Image 1 (cartoon, rainbow, N blue to C red):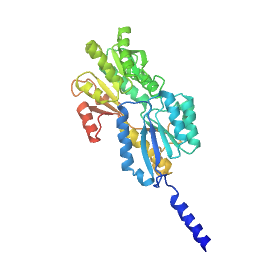
Image 2 (image 1 turned 120 degrees about the vertical axis):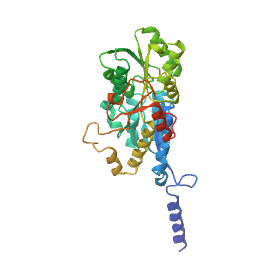
Image 3 (image 1 turned 90 degrees about the horizontal axis):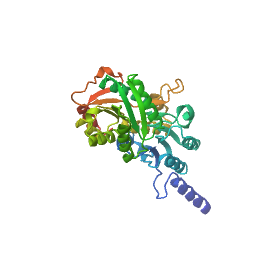
Length: 357
């Protein structure tokens, strides 16, 4: 009888301890969003992640959403993916690939999947032709389409044509490749693409690239920012040179500085992604994958397995123009692209308590 009581006590202790952390509480499993750099762009994405964490009640499922900022280029992402593989509380990872065709990053993504970790590409996809199997799906912007819409804006802002230089953090990233190709297609044969200059996310180099482009290419009349900080970098240099009237300036995204730049008359157009919803929908999908919520997965990807691009979830686009004087009109753009004046866009930001997008 004494032995029976002892073994019963042990069984109760083991059962009570299952699923507990070292501190005695239940283990919280992490859903991680890993960035490809450090920019105010990610602030809105983080807010979307936190909103999803609260509204979708991740805590009730023992889950927590976190954002890890990678500031060490491709090797930083490789190292962090390896760390996740050794951390049993990490159950899902959404990665914004620094470079689309980095086989080492894709290998680490596959290793995580082999360990049962759910893996997405978020904001910036891997090379789909080579590494599609390294992630379940992509959540973010159709960057080729976004580039075309910005190219359409350029064509209508400067109908006599010209030449453009684009500026970007990582020229080899899939989103950069898609955007610059899209800009050229949307602008059409009346515009010559001179260069696509990379800065590796260095703000000083970003400004130097603009200065060098203006100096070395006297025929350039359109300056295109492909990453969120590139627009403000272009404006900084153009202001310093006092040459605003010489250039049409357009950019991806709407950092707080870019919003002020447009209000001050230094930006002609912004093509704005929705990083808030990228963060929100990435968490929504990763939660569904972890909990095997097939209904939510089917709602988000009704054509997955039927269509070659059925594993892509788009989060929408906005064209933003100054409040007055813009030649750009709603009818110039795709029906799926929202068209907003700066004041209307600011109202949208306020609705979600955002400073930028």
